Picture 1: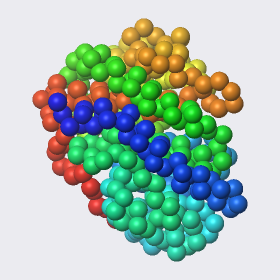
Picture 2: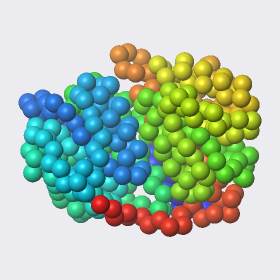
Picture 3: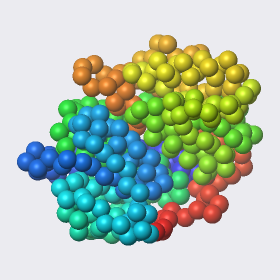
Picture 4: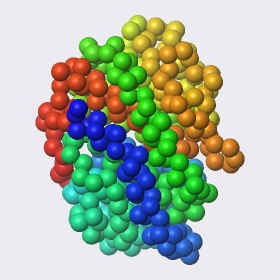
Length: 350
């Protein structure tokens, strides 16, 4: 068994440990933000962590109304342009906490008067030391180059940060995330059988929308890293603005499609891809009664009742089938998912 697959299986435990360990500190942070609510949030990250930040942007804006921007690190590291960030919240996200450019962004933000948060898996890292508030993913050492358990740990970190910023997210709902992650893991044998069909795949598109837009990026990244598949990633809206022209008969298309406000447009896209005779594989869950035959269904009803978006808690369980798919497909292709060519666990860029 690959290290990547073993770490995928650890995710329910990592989520549970992180929740337990971070709750007390988050209560204090929430009280701080009640007194001094930041007018804007800026997120700095690279790679898989940048995909997690994309989710954080949607989540915080949807649940708190605070505008969120994704930092362009080169503005600080290469152009050395000072930003006016007094009173803002700036959060950097890094598995290792040693990503040079995101740390530079965080340090510059502190000097500009921002309150800083660092979401990392390493308690002794530079990021944890720099941040005014370090939020630690309790993932243990991640040995596989392709990040899995730290990605979902970072997604959880954004749920916690949104809660601290005043989002109406209940802790009892977050406490169900390990259970939902376990439900997704139960699909491992099915995912392995599905991956067999794509053994010779060289290119694909991956599509999501809204809260699961980040998961489209992350699924594609995992296939690029471990399977050497040229995987283009799009929102449902963006693929219709031109890129869908490259999709034809038997072209692989992967859709992340929960129920909720994004379902009607994702359903419309699935129907259009069927008309093009694309080879479409959808991830959804058993609460979705309208999903097409052949969809991968997580055996858990994830739709929520009340004022929160129906798909609010789908991103963590929905990425797990995608992670398993990439890990299984890499092995079927005769590749080692733990040692992608040309990659190291920590990437240092400026």
